[in-house]
Each structure stands twice: as C-alpha cells, then as structure tokens.
Length: 34
Length: 533
Image (tube, rainbow over all chains, first blue to last red; front, side, top):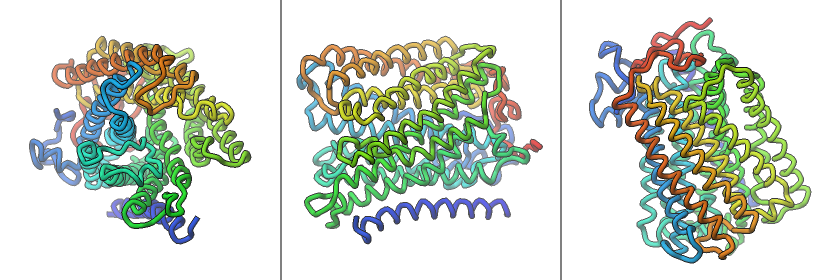
C-alpha cells in the first residue's frame, strides 16, 4: 500500500509539471500578450 | 504471436496480469496490463507505422526520380512529406523506444511491472486512434495538411479540416507520450529492487529516465502550440496569425523549444540501447559508466537552450545567433564523450560481430557522421547557405535513421531471443544489416551533394542539374525499403520456427534480464523482487 501511494505521489507531481507547462505556455501568450 | 509464455499458471495471476486467467484472443491484447504484452504491441505498432511512413517515402522518392511532375501533384507531395515526418517521428521511432522501455525497464531494475499498469494500457491504445486520425486526414476535403511536420503558421491557419484532425492526433500522441513518461520515471524512481541503486542501473534505464523528464517538459509545450493553432483557426484568437496581429515566428520559437529536445528524446534511448549492445559484444564493461550518465544529462540540459539554431534565417540579433551557435557546438562535447566511451569500450575487447553489434557499429559510424553535419549546420554563416536544402534532409536522416533506427534494429536483434525464447537466423540478420547499410548510404549520402548544390527540400520538381543525385537517391531508397522485408521475414521466422535460445545467448551481456531470468521470460517476473544488496 505504501508503494502505491508513493507511486501515486510521484505520478501526480510529474503530471502537475506537465499540466503547468501546457497551461503556462498558453496563458503566457494569451493573458500576458507577447 | 505471443512473445512470452506463462510459466506461473493461473494461481499467480494477480495484480497486473490481464493474461493468463483473464481474457483470451484479441481481448487479451486490448485489456492487458502486462508490461511485456504492452511492449510487444508498441513494437508491432511501430513497425506498422514504419511501413506506412516508408510507403510515403517511396512515393516521395518515386516522384523525385526525375525532374518534372510524374506521379503526384505538388499539393499531395506536400501532404506526403508532412505525414511521412509526423508518422515516422511520433508513430514509428518514439513508440519503438517506448516498446523497448516497457519490455526492458522492469526486467533491468528488478521490478514486477510498470508503476501504473492500467495507465500503461491506455497509453498504448491511444496510439492507434491518433494514427488513424493522421491517415484519415488524407481522405477529408482538402486532404491532409501540407504544412511540413513542423506545422508552421500561418499555413496551418489556412489549411482544411485535415489540419484539425492532425492537431487532435498530436494532442493524443502527446497525451500518450506524457502518460508513458510518467509511468517510466515513476517505475525507475520507486520500483527498483533492493540494492539496485541509480548508479548501478543499466545505461538504457538511465537514458530513459532522462528522456522521461524531457518528454514531460516539452510535450505539453507542443500541445500548447497546436492548441493555440486550433484557437487561431476556429475561435478568433491571433496567436500566430499575422492578419490578426499575431506572430508566425512566435510559433517557430515555441515549436522548436519542443522540437530540439525531441531530437534527443529520440536519440537518448538509442544511445541507451547501443550502450547495452557494445559492451556485450566487446565482452567488457562499458567504459566510463558515470561519465556516460553525466554526458546524457548534459545533452538533455543543453537541448533546452539551442532551439533557435533551426531559425537562423527568420531573423534575429547577431548576439542571439552567436548564443545559439555556441550553445549548439557545446553539445558536441558530451556527445563526443559518448562516442569516445563506446570506442574505448571496444578497445582491446574480445569483439565479435553478430547482427546486433553490426547495427551498433553502423550506428556509431553513421550517427557520428550525422553529428558532424549537425556541427556544420550549427554555424550561422554556413546554415544561412544550407537552410532548407537537401543537406539538412541528409543530416537529420543520418541522425534519425542511422541513429535511432539502426539502434532500434540492434536492440531488436539483441533482445529477440529473450523476448521470444528463440534465436533469429544470424545469416538473415547480417543480410538485413548489409543491405540496409549500403542502401541507406546510397539514399542519403548523395543528398549532401544535392543540398550543397542548392536543391531545396519539400519540392516535387527540380532543375535538371540535380537529376543524377536524385536518381541515385531514389534507387537507394527503393533498395532500402525492400531490404526491410528481410527484417520482417527474419523476425517472423524467429517467432515461428527459430531454434531454442539459451538463457544467456550473448556471453558479455550482464544486466538482470540475462543473469536473473530464464529464456523466454515468464509472464510475471520478479515477484518477489530480487535482493541485489
């Protein structure tokens, strides 16, 4: 059980990084202009 | 077509297994969560896409056999070059190395399976849908987009519905890659057997750990770029559309921020495969293991600061050109470390040249050549002359085909006995290597000369002066395409009627899959994990 939650934690951190990049690149050029 | 056998029986079917004890037939493959099944599906999918992309390459080379328009119209020619690039990069090469990762990483680190076994299944099964979208785009009004694999604005804003299908396909391919990477990184970080420290891992695992991070960092950027293209097309935004105040060059910056690390996403796992094969057939440990790890990391980090070397001709300050030129030439240092270490591994080794080693040596020779032409192109004054010529086409095919594809062939022949439990026919493998090696060079070496003479890429017609180089190149391409039938025959023959393989057919192989597992590997491996302390 401990291994599962550790995996889930790592997976969520990595997924958050990916999501932040995706949203970030659009927001940068949308809200902030160029 | 199963590549693994069940030696544990139903009693051991728990947790990650969809088979045995689960579904049979096609449902086994649709529902499987076993890393070996999924790895096998990735590899066959990759071969199918390699064939589709290869047929497109044959059409391109058939059209270019002579000057003038013979077989396809210019619009369809552009569609072919676009889809050839997208399918080969996202459908063939990347899935091939994800297939290797699925098969090998759990076995090499002593893990029972991948960290997220169900997500692993999903990562794969997204791919056929994405590939279908790409292929279907040929049959919608306006056809497939003819914008080049880089999907530059503003052409992408002007294309028909095929562009929307392609954007959606890129989203799906990106999702699959990101999920695959999260799985691989988590597996390597959390599921290594006791005693399997990071610095004891086989180099293939190290290259994939770093590739996983690269993918997580840059695939969302590509997804963001194509999403902005989509909103420009349908939702009234003007990120890249100059007609609305947008900037097409911005797209190029965003694309190549993804695109250059993408080159290393393809190359690093290939380095990992070669780093397993060369020591095995040199019967020596890999020379400079730690420096290989650091060089791989350095290449990955540098790949983030070189993207604009693809854009010297679109206009940028001289200081910008200098920065990107120096940063690009800097990549030659860690890459040189790797090439040196592979050669040093072979130095005074007890060398034999079975098919995997032949492909690894072919990789070493030709990838280094591709690296040198990359250095040439990194220099601003020369690149301005050679930009968008066949010199560039020759360069990246030496990196992508002789680099990634040769490494993939080396890996397939190397691990085929472990995967199938049977030996491939060595003579067939050697024939496949030599035919591929000869025809590859006939196809692409002459393209350097066509490019130096000024032949532009992505054109279906050309002046008479380029005819000889193009004729030679097309003959080489047809030969190389046909040579791959030998590969298919060798693999199918191995699976169907190959001689039984011993547990460790390669004397110098020393990673866990050779030393701790029988051949063929059981359906469930390392349950419980081995203690390597």
